[in-house]
Image 1 (cartoon, rainbow, N blue to C red):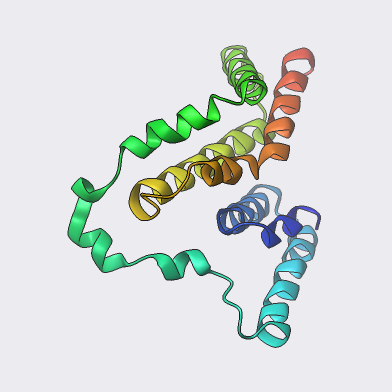
Image 2: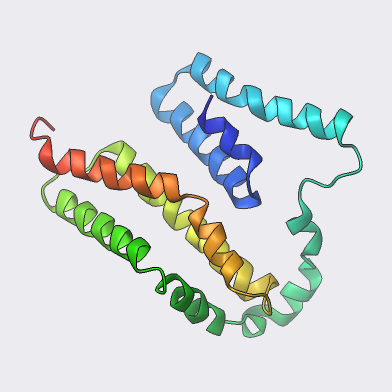
Length: 176
């Protein structure tokens, strides 16, 4: 249920929360837990339908002009924004250290056959979020400041810490 409260943050987090809930449903097959997680999603839907009827919940989707994206194709994408996003991320040295440490632990655990499902799911969700942010900034928000890209990435800071902790646990727990 706590995980489903992430739904009320940013647009990409909504998609990622759906992925988490359905991935857990697939692997754990706990119908009661999944139903409880979906409860706040239903509350959010009721909130938008009855209490906030004039407010759009997907402002990002309204900014997308699909015909413009398909007409310009791959050549219309602003690939230089990827470098600008990463340059902005690299200014936060402690975050870079955490991510590098997490990646190193993940690779070590992979070599030692100690990766857990939690570690793999966390890493996948972090990568999916990064891909979403990059796609947003190369296709739609081509001329927007890059601090918001960093904030979109940092929305999953708690998941970065969880991923790091799970990787440390996998490395030092020899029972796996």
